[in-house]
Image (cartoon, each protein chain N blue to C red):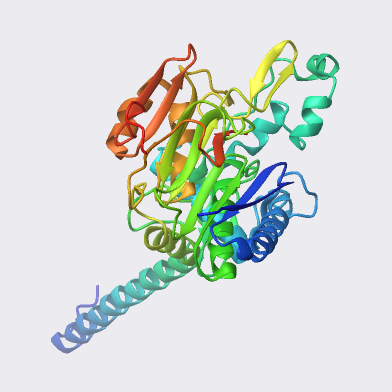
Length: 315
Length: 98
């Protein structure tokens, strides 16, 4: 079965849309673009006119929000609850203080030496998700004073899920895959044997390269890694996965975790939480019964749950 | 000292009983009234579940809890079908950090 592919950049990351219907790719692509534009307007942390930016500027007041932002905040609160706060959307100010305060392409290009003098050893206490009050029926949210939401982790995965659903509806049949910076959601009828996905530490690795390939018929795949989106401040190297307990980038034994789940959101919740939980991640992922692949800082790889045996290659 | 006649004493006792009843009833009404005013003034500050919520109104707290428990509860969900192994070099997309 021929698979049509369209790629571009959005939300500060790569976008890939694959369709099993060659003539459906344009419709799928248009649907995905529309979803991503809505997502950008609703919960971009780097747009002054996004709903999220306005919400963060109005902590202490009850604010009515769009259905999309309500869904994204609900997903983030669910992530926090299911991970006992390992994935916490109230890291907004902590990650900004750590230096990730702009689109990452501009962060990486800045003079780290100069900024390092300002940012040295600064950290901002993560206030915790429990204080957020979301009313889904009325679509209102209230943030405690001092809280800034960052929906980056679950937000991108949610966007992939929504985009895949919208793309399938636009195509009207067959199967689609949407990848946002390596977070993948699939919908509809997969190609024979499933969607073939290379599991790597960096989503920029070409898919036809060597490495672990898994075939996924349904659901979502997410990879969290401390090896990408890194920057320097004051002589220290930072990355984008914040440990809410320390308010600093994580420093655990695993540098990359990949998880397969029913949705990209659930896969992303598990992979991010595993990085944050550190040594406890293996037991926690095992209890979740989700297939997972963990890479230690020294390169040692662990396979958890029903992850396919790398030695048994499908025909 | 003037002594009271039995009739005068009985009337005095009845007057005393009326005063006692009136004071008791008035006090009861006052207690109910003050309690109602206090409850109305501080609605939403207390939670029946005993959790440390800081909602500004009772409605907010109740709705928030119920909507979260019904709309987004549950564990992380496994995919309907487990992944299988594919041949190296045959993938069409990469999952990795970004």
